[in-house]
Image 1: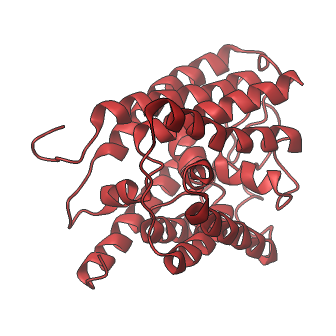
Image 2 (image 1 turned 45 degrees about the vertical axis):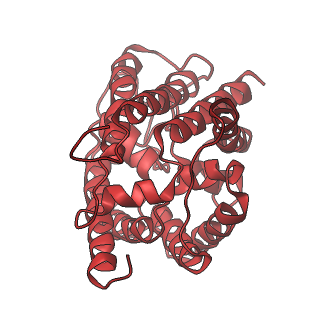
Image 3 (image 1 turned 60 degrees about the vertical axis):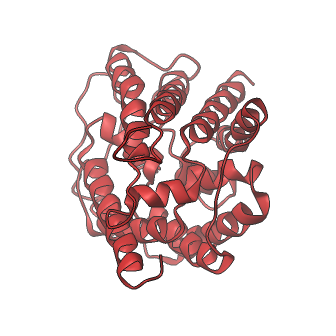
Length: 145
Length: 161
């Protein structure tokens, strides 16, 4: 799209982001809760006994792939390129453990908490962004990418 | 039933937004984190876009007595910072950088590439289960600074993300 960043999709990103924000706003104003995926996923699978009612958590979590599928069908396919299964397994364990320990992820802290100017979410988002940048830099410097 | 329908609509819109924005593609997400490589700023546009409706929603929330389809707001009230929050966020960032996946896109992409997304989601649930063995109660919940506001409920240290 832009000459400097040939692979960037600023328009799609902005439209998709607006829809994500509307989804989180529906959760907040409709049900009075944070649309935090890690917390709702833990709740839906019985790995947390606090938070949203189980039926709410399950419905939201089921909605995620349903929405992605609808877009995939409407647009003739959504690209999704994954790293190796070994890396996915290691990354998955760290993401699951870290998001529960840190009480949130990109959606709860990054979208909902930052827009509320929550001090905890601002700190968490700064830290997971920084460690994400650092991790990929290490992968790049060690020749893994 | 109404509440479940609202949650399903919210989840489906969230998944649709992730798919439309390119965030269901782990390599695009990792390219945002790749400052030393061919950097892709798309994720910043997604986050910026999501802030707009949510910033408005928080303003509306302050004026509402209760949510439209629920009897009370149930929002995180803890404001104090603690080591668990910081360590958890740093660990999450490491996993996010390694795989290019965070929980939302991982679950959404179960509909796109189930063979690839399922191992990540199962490993993520295992990581969440591991967290159940971490002793609780030490992390800054005793000396809390609360959100101030006329319509906020009593303290509840609920999960955000």
